[in-house]
Amino acid sequence: MEITLCSVGGYNEVGKNMTALKIGDEVIILDMGVFVPKLIDFEEEGSRQSASANELVRYGAIPDDSIISSWKNLVKAIAVTHCHIDHCAAIPYLSSKYNAPIYGTPFSVAFIKSLLSDEKKTIKNKLKVLNPGSIVKVSKNISIEFINTTHSTLQTVMIAVHTPEGVILYSNDFKFDNHPVLGKAPDYVRLKKIAKEGVLALIVDSLYAPDASKTPSEKVAREMLKDVMLGTDNSGHAIIVTTFASHLARLRSIVDFGKKLNRKVVFLGRSMAKYSAAGDAAGLVNYSKEAGIFGYRNQVKKVLKDVEKNRDRYVVVCTGNQGEPKAVLSRMAIKELPFKFLPDDHIIFSCKTIPVDINIANRALLESRLKKNKVRIFKDIHVSGHAAREDLRDLIDMVKPQNILPAHGNPNQTTALAELAVEMGYKIGKEIHLMNDGQMLKLK
Figure 1 (cartoon, one colour):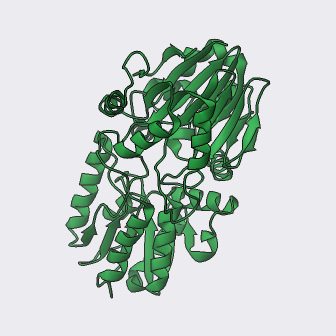
Figure 2 (figure 1 turned 180 degrees about the vertical axis):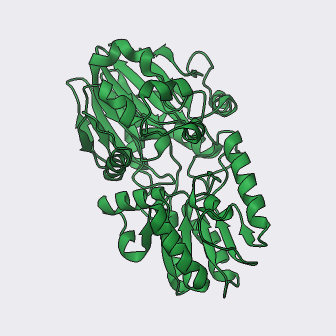
Figure 3 (figure 1 turned 120 degrees about the horizontal axis):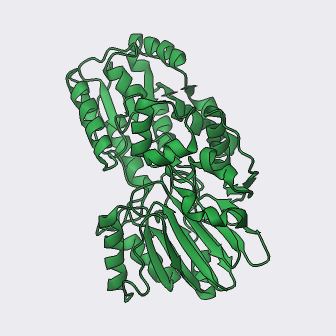
């Protein structure tokens, strides 16, 4: 049976992930994400809600799926690895072209529903829940399996597409965290069993392939936060933490330490509200009962007025970790929101700056504004959600793929993964395939 892969998006950049597999005369689509820097640029000029798919494609904010237009009527399923927007937020614009259901974990499906509601979009595709560790037969020749892994959000999976010619394993994004704060450790047993079945191709996250290390566990980030929140004198001062809204495990740690400080924890910002609600809906957390959650501007203003009067009674958790101009922390820094920073207030960046130009510039601007208020800034209180070079080596060694396709990275990152594979005995152009967006590769 002939198998062709199309690298629709996510092979030249970090994000915009979308891969299509043509297996005989049937097609499976894996992920359907946005390119966040271009999306931020676009939103500076116009509204995403009123934008058409063609506009966003032209802007480079979502994948150009015209390359697979001839496959349109062959699509049997769309499957997403997790709830990050660079993997699922193009669904409101692209999915209705395909007469196929969308499979995701409970958290991913809850988030997609929230996304559709927030953007006032409807799609014709059925949203179907597939739990980690489960498999569904989508046609006579194809099954999709969700294999539990860990990442910087919950219910992230590797997708195994089972075909008569072997398994195609799609591993964007993942880390090997053996001691997660929330959720289960990766399913190594299943990965080793799949290796015995035969992995025809591994499509894999390249983001930290250049880093000669193993990515630390989320428990390390929890200890870092503990040191700052509980080990530094903050009496009488505001504590403001910014992190990725989707990072429910990180939020767990912040809530726990806020309670130890006898402070009320409040989540501020629309994405904080959206991901927390999705986590509650999926039964993963219960933050709606443990914290105040405020997504809309008027709510945020009201809460911040009270925080300003009672600054040592709250822990504020807000959007803006990348310095996004419309996020809560950025608007606080320019006094667009009613809060006055005082010397020695604590600002904790429980994140790292995603290394793209717009984020680097936005974060630098935000930090310079905050420093003028003589606040204390704690940066990089974080561990990554992405596999580093030695984790990637372990994955390749574990599943023993016939072919390797570096993805989810810029050319430096995908090349670093290719170099690792060469170290392990694979050959570029023969078993290692460095793809660009919009290319085709015959796997069988």
